[in-house]
Length: 192
Image (tube, rainbow, N blue to C red; front, side, top):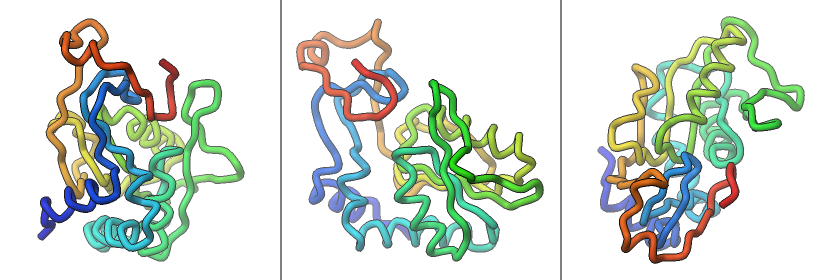
């Protein structure tokens, strides 16, 4: 069983859990941000979290692990290493998620989708659409942190190491106390 307090202690010790005013990849505003790269730069934590995801999906025996770039690439690659399968990623080109760089999913391949953090699940859904368009069979979705408050139900076999209660706001509903804090945009998709 996963010890949630142990996970949060790791996040805090690596300064992966930040406080302030953030614009998330989903374009929503939040007072907290999980900077996954800060924790995954440490090999022992990368291995520990990847093993948790790999163990959860061990019986699915995927042929390939795919992740959305940039956030999920490090975690997805290590999950693939733990599972002994090929790892690839999808990335944005002109605003659209694509599989390129010579990567491909062969029709009938069993595919595990791995992401570091989800808020709305939009990037993962785009990757899942690419897998399905290629004829791949999605075996499940593995995530380090689910910030969706239970709203991102992407697959019947979905596993998150930890779920964080995450309050986020549209640009029109930002509370005054949060609006008074300068915006930070640590994500990779949109500029402020």
